[in-house]
Amino acid sequence: MKPMRLSELVVGIKGAGEMASGIAWCLYQAHIRKLFLMEIPEPHAVRREVCFSEAVPLGAKTVEGVQAVRVEGREEVRNAWEQGQLPVVVDPKWAMIEEVGPDVLVDAILAKRNLGTARKDAPLVIGLGPGFTAGRDVNMVIETNRGHHLGRIILEGSAETNTGVPGAIGGYAEERVFRAPASGRFTTLAVIGDKILKGDLIGVVKEHEVRAEIDGVIRGLIASGYRVDEGLKLGDIDPRGDVSYCTTISEKSRTIGGAVLGAILRVFNK
Image 1: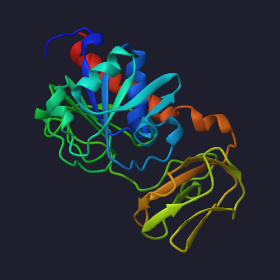
Image 2 (image 1 turned 90 degrees about the vertical axis):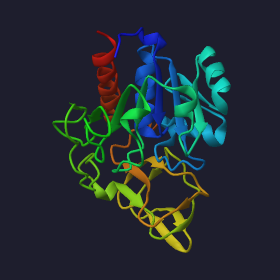
Image 3 (image 1 turned 90 degrees about the horizontal axis):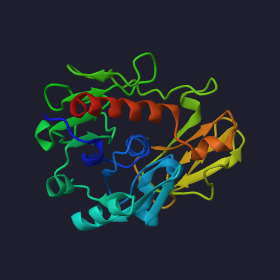
Image 4 (image 1 turned 180 degrees about the vertical axis):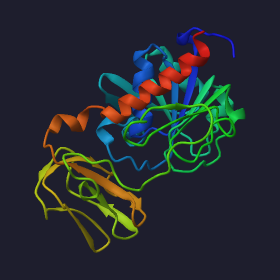
């Protein structure tokens, strides 16, 4: 792949949730501005205050000074670039990849398995976390598991296997996460940033109550009214109690964003 000016690179990102948004934000700060994010009609993002996926229901979303807007089609994508905005397209079949033809494609769905991403999709294809094999279905894999190897760029092989256990914050791991007790519509009066106590009611799925298991601040919460499947992560509680963490990008997202930037520089900044 030939060297390119970073300002001319076109980067497509599958997903617009927390990790995808952290990546987009990091690349934007590095003056890689020709970005577009692809999302489903009802995003199941949890940390919505730092997710560009909120542009889908709201029309626009600003995260740490960078604004994303919901658009339709290639021309609106280009118009958003001219305005210095990040375009978010409702595109569950990823049709914009063929329409726009990105130089880099990042699969940031975090589905723990590959849902169809292939090396032929772009000159440089990067997969986040388990489910991808560098050198086979993607060019590079970024390690997403917290710990010593977080953010490592993998050129051959796969990321660590998903443990299914959330990273610990303030000494709490699984207890800080609340999940759907059944399948159905999730309804809640709570909002991100609420301070709650152990046992407080957070929401309801059908007739099943969802209650806090620890004291803290609601850092993430899926949108009320969305349909969820049993076991789906509905949100998380930060026991540190700092409300500012709800509206700022996490250290994990920043690390992974920096790793994706580093992966791009390896290829296009020779």
